[in-house]
Image (cartoon, rainbow, N blue to C red; front, side, top):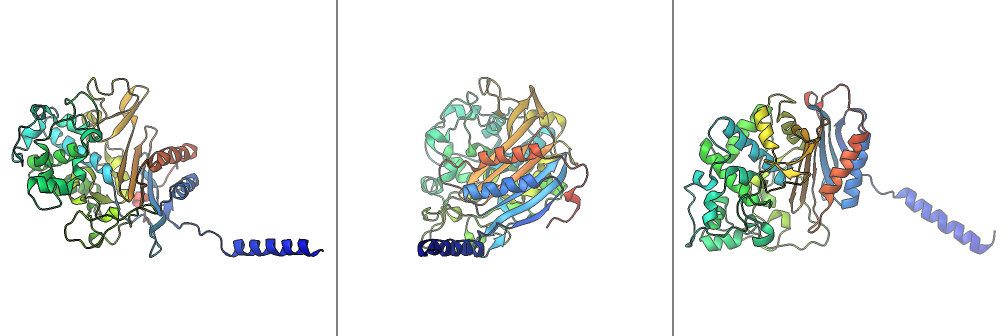
Length: 424
């Protein structure tokens, strides 16, 4: 063998040795699944790799039976702790369905009418600044708040829930501004459109709904939800999250900005230096009714299964399920194939709403992407991820397509229920 060929052979052998000795580590996978769901594991791992998420959590039910509850990848890169089914995560805007359930329970108890004027129900919250309120504010109904048709458009005037320093200064209240200070500030801000005339996603509208729950129930929003929604289902590990790193729960995922993201000044005055955006770029404590809950994917999918009694106890009556999935009144979403109901997106199947429709919702905060899906064919699933790209994040959309496709190839397990077995 001549020398050039020999050198090439030695070089290729050395490369092969290095590659064999140092393969890319596979993300850990924890938890349990019934047979036939292997494609779902592949789907989740592909999503982590494509979107650079350190970890994710997924729970899947079929007709009310838990068939998969798993963690994928890392809850914390620094400690190499894996995500497990017991890991906790901010659920972001998946909190909105929880609030909608609370409102519908009050409707069932005849303590509330969906077409009641919303701000008349919270008269103790008065304007914090001089100025004449927009007269259309008095026309906004509870139903319109639930359907995001109240009149605020964050694409036009911004999202007040993410302006805690500005609002604290304007209302002369301690920074960062709490939810009541934000509402009192908004009482003299003009609406962006006439209530009920179009859809525009509004975190602020759900902040108002949380205060309505408190006023009509005589409890704090958190106490009401824990007692009336979570406790009947046996959900004991759900709570309102905290912003700061040193106030997180030990079981919470570490929320990561993408590589290269800039640190920010904390919304909490007096915090030294700069912080990662998930731990001070916004005031989570002001977001209870639209984005503050922390829980496990397994518990959220249990909530989905209990909505209509697919897995007892039923949280809502059939009449309330019909309201939950009802199309908004014209002119909103008249010709749209999908629309926003009460706390959830809805796509009717063959013209049917209610349990004959697909429901879904996404959630997004710095360091967090969440997505829930309830399909008319019996599958439901919830996924959490512990990173988010700052602009144009497609993880939720990709998760929707990828996991639904994987479930489309799966054979529903004929028996077994991980709700009744240990999940580790």
